Image (cartoon, rainbow, N blue to C red; front, top):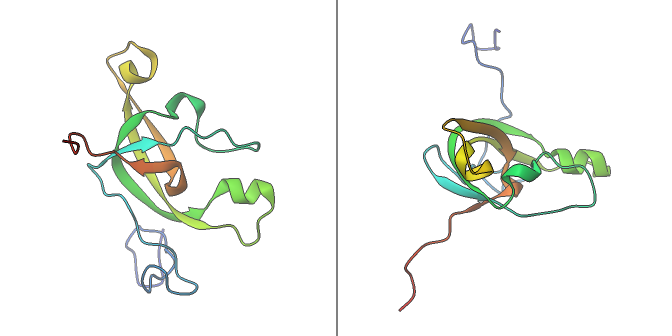
Length: 122
């Protein structure tokens, strides 16, 4: 695929003028290698966060850019929120109690939270 600047093979992404700037997409909250937890949400509408990963922790392996949040699309929000999408890898054994492979799921930022810090108490 060609972009307007030449044959880079990368798709054009919306311009980023800084997180929070009017009309600009949000900055990425998570980085590859970071451990995250999928929120244990149960909305009354379609969501792209599969039940089998909700409440589980995984590791961000890639950031796929900013895309419309599908929950907003199905509920008719106009315009839908634009959010970073992350490829998050989970251990099959953590998800189902067995398996020596991993499962990678694309998840919007709203579905994720940082891993809580351990050992911060007295």
